[in-house]
Image 1 (tube, rainbow, N blue to C red):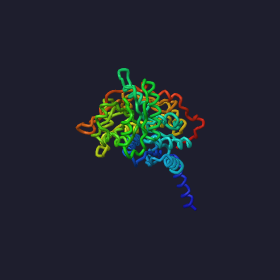
Image 2 (image 1 turned 120 degrees about the horizontal axis):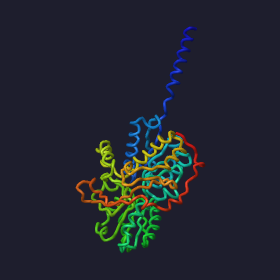
Image 3 (image 1 turned 60 degrees about the vertical axis):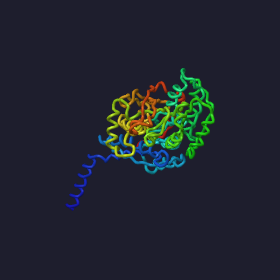
Image 4 (image 1 turned 90 degrees about the vertical axis):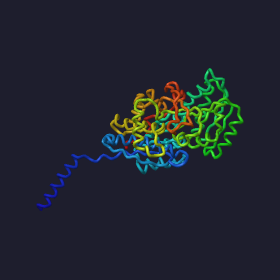
Length: 414
């Protein structure tokens, strides 16, 4: 009996000790979802690196709210239907706390609709269709890349400026969410700046034969060709364009990612827009590049680009919101993210950035750039020609975006 009493007493003391120690905090699981196969494979890798850098930075300081951050990756493919299934599985079976990524705007639209249904916050790191901030916007989705309407406002204003005689514009775009959404914005902007859309060429999403697309473009007399083609398709397209065409005619590309430039250094490009470059003379850029190169300098993308930069900042914004809110409750975090503001220094850009609360889209500096295909080394090819402040490239249609009421958004506290 004495032995039994002693065991009971010991178990009681152990229970008191465990109660004082408190339960082990469960990790916060973040799912990185980008199409890691197909024409955006390199973009997906660059995006993951940005997310990874932010997560490692926070984990080195003890995580958030005393909880480790665990990053998992899933390939949603480029099929929107399959992407929705992946999102459903991640939320209901894997029980992820948050989702970050996208790249493909069609995939982002599909996955974010599922996330909204469950109240899971979806951080769209790198999708640039204007529709992501308009008809496909959601209360639980926050878009951190600039979109085609921002880039084209800067580029079309330049191409159709008062001193230019150019007025006839041809639209060349992909037959997908990204292309159609950008073309819709371009039509409005061309009219605003006094131009006329004289033709439209729609390229297949897989773009099996760029030569045929270019023949159709050449058959239409235009002063300006506004291009909305992305990923490896962009590399294939410009590899077949006669450089003389780019000197006789004004071509512009709403956005060109580093992952579309670096793998094809000898391919000529027209003027394009971007949100960041590794050689910007902005506070924090050199330090960020050094951190990246220490971690990934031995890989194919040994210099960071705009995709990595955007993914890093987007993930930081999510984790900082959790810290400020002191909770993972989605309603509290939505309120925090809607108030997001960051200084130019914090973003390594030239202007402060802010979240447009009506559309959940970050407004930021737009850079106009060109590519030097004869640069001594690929990383030296990008040349920044100028910049435009966020308020000068704001897309007015975003003021009319309608998000689901917070009161009708399911509660989620991972």
